[in-house]
Length: 71
Image (cartoon, rainbow, N blue to C red; front, side):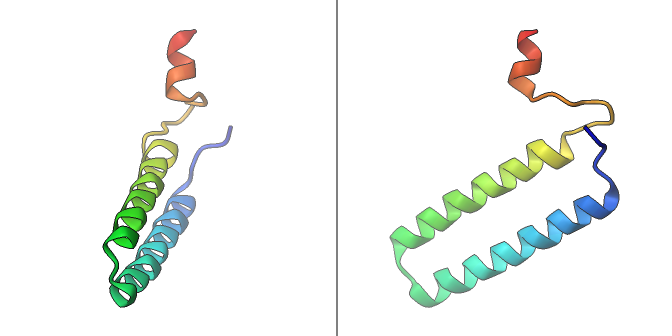
């Protein structure tokens, strides 16, 4: 698996910022508590995926955490 370069990280950060802004506008105008909870949970999952797939990956690390620990 290839290393994540700075340009890829920047693209992911921009995409997450745009997603957060888009969801924030929807939550602001609709103003339903249920929608706010669902959007917050979905954004939390997106940011968690960003954390484990881009920020925690080190050069030469190809495996997922759990599968790699079982070996």
